[in-house]
Amino acid sequence: MATVSRGIKAPIIREGDDIVKIVTDCVLTAAKEDGFEFHDRDVVAVTEAVVARAAGNYATIDNIGEDVKAKLGGETVGVVFPILSRNRFAICLRGIARGAKKVVVQLGYPSDEVGNHLVDLDALDDSGVDPYKDVLSVADFRRHFGTPLHPFTGVDYISYYAQLIEEEGADAEIILANRPEAILAYTDKVLCCDTHTRFRTQRRIKAAGASVCLTLCDILNAPVNGSGYNAEYGLLGSNKSTEGVVKLFPNNAQQIAEELSASLCAATGKQIEAMVYGDGAFKDPVGRIWELADPVVSPGYTAGLEGLPNELKLKYLADNDYANLSGAELRAAIEKAIREKDKDLKGSMATQGTTPRRLTDLLGSLCDLTSGSGDKGTPIVLVQGYFTNYAD
Image 1 (cartoon, rainbow, N blue to C red):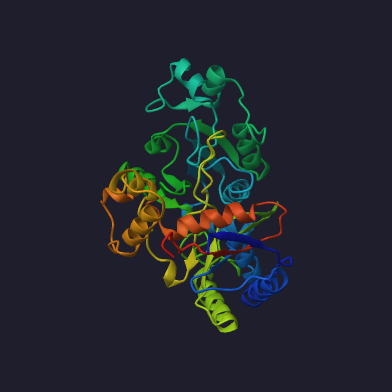
Image 2 (image 1 turned 135 degrees about the vertical axis):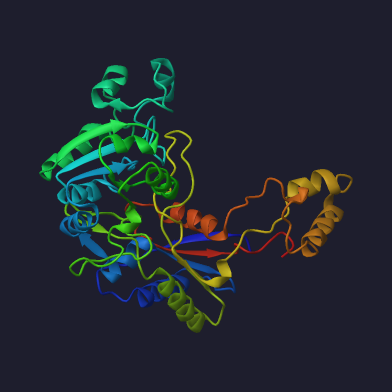
């Protein structure tokens, strides 16, 4: 069969719901209503948001503030390289401010880590500013670039983040600099808030003399007054629930993936793989935003989804190895090449142009695009035929 990605509707998930039973029932109901069958190596994926909601993995601004104060001293805290996001970071910043007397936010420029631009690249080129070494105050930034607004949200994030901090009763200072060590001119107690580059940022700041340097993984990596938590990722992967509460990345994703697979295997008699997925890993070529604000695409998945694709490039075979063939002969030759391919094609010219990414990143991206992030109401995705090939 060809590859099919099917969004499956689900009820609104609430804290305490049995997510494994709900997903199993929804998938089985969809099969009955839409008339499709199950096959070995079908993949059922469920978004991390509903997994975390069912588990009640939430924390308040007060929980964040208490943890920040305990771990960073409650005086001046440096917040380095946060992404520009009302959903992903604004509530975290409120909590950080609640646990400090002053917050110095160091923003990278011209964009944040995931591609939200503070300033257009052409404007930066024309400004004479050197982004590799220049540290800008807000006044410096305004003098060079004015008050640019985010192209999608219309928000001036410099003013917005300063306002959030001040509303929590802390003093706010914003600087713009791309060298992580620049923060140490303002405070030696630092919270690295980048996602995928956090360990490099932390290493450099520690080497430059910080007395305390943590990442967002170190905040709410254990419960605070009964709050939710994530032992591995802390606040990373969290997003806004209400103005005073964040939903954390699920701390039971692996357990849910394995239980869901077992439930579906029992119900269908087929080997069904399962995964929990968050943001897909792709970049918008117009807005230049890289979607992946979660620490990983999939925090939990069954063993059958380990590894990378091991695929031949059909176009390469047709244009090179079998350029003299056509029709049934060409088809037969390519099918034979696929059936006899090595188990590890890494480095082979016949694989060039295939996608050397983890299966969970590819499948999670497909699921994220299928389910969307708005009002489709399909937090469950069934992917069928993903592991079939031309020879099948």
